Amino acid sequence: MTTAMFWCRNILSNGLTVLQFPRQSANTTQLSIAVKYGSNQEPKEIAGVAHFIEHMLAGGSEKRIQLSRSIENSGGILDFYTDHEHMMAAMDVLPGELVEASFIISELLFNVDFEEDKFRQETKIILNELSEALDDPAERIEELLLKSLFKKHPVNRPVGGFPRTVKRLTLDELCKAHKTNYVPQNMILILTGNYNDETAAVVLKNFQDKNLGKPSTEKLVPAETSKPVPLVVEKKAGIAQTYLNMGARTVCSSHPDSPVLNLMSALLTGGTNSRLFIELREKNALTYDVSSDHNKGIDFGYFGISCAVKEKNLTKAKGIILKELAKLRTEKVPIDELERTKNMIVGASLRGMDDPQECSEILSYMEMQFKSENALVDHIAKIKVVSSQDIIDVANTYLQEDLLATVLLKPKK
Image (cartoon, rainbow, N blue to C red):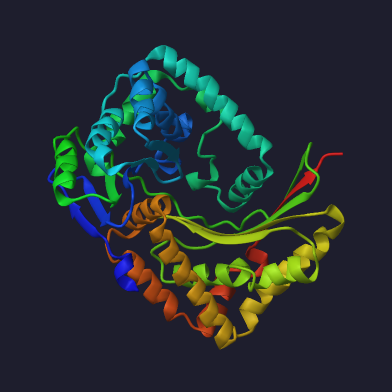
């Protein structure tokens, strides 16, 4: 079982990290590049620049547009997205197109031929994107939760930035951020799916030749010491239900308590056997869906529980969630439930490695957080040894009621 979670890791002479996970039974090949420059790494005054660079990679010139579209001409797909800690460029192509695809993605990532008129056009597109995010209640309530939990850490800012910072951003500022951060030492190349060693060697040689300078030094983020805002209520027109999000600050991915928090999340909402699924949906029909997650990165972490309910059922739903959190703090999880939940996590990890897109995301995340080809195996091993007493101890450390932030997005009548 564990062999399906190992990959080959090496670092080229120019500092580029390469992860390979071949699957000869696959019908396609995936080539992804993760750039360790997301919204957490950008200066506050130009918030949104990392996301803006992502837009310009594929749309920043007429040549770039044609290169991006050429992937589709041969049956492939090309996708970009930005998160708090990285930008990901992901290709899925037919095996015979891999070499050509690697030249295209290299051209898009390293060249700086952005055009002013395309920059102005993308500004309008991004402002539309930010407006859509504000219209999405799930995205809005997550933003509100992060602002409630974090005062100093840049994770409290939207990945796309703010309309005011996007409007003020200049092409020169964008090019400087690109030049500093889009260098091999700041990148992870991930090759998965159907390919052979000869083809891989050609792909890597194309990237081996890139040596464009050194990335900027990482800045330390001050520790959060203040308690979160206990209650935030916002009203929004056009929604029929009240969106509820409850959360607490926790720990980063490398902290020993992190696997325990991951397991607690699965206990609460990991499948139809999970506690909050049964209590909120099955028994009381208060919500269609409830989710929880332990979100964590290199230097931050938070635990969140979210659902949407009718306003008249809000107090009851909140009470059930608090009751289940109290049980985690005071009652030992039965052995059969604990083992079942551990199996859910192992199964989800293996399914993720079988999925072409998710596999690349898993590998990039594990590399950024742990810098090891054994990271997923190590994580599963840590999950397997979590005890019921560990859950009680960790729940009491992070999920006491006075450490929780509650965010409500209510219908505006």
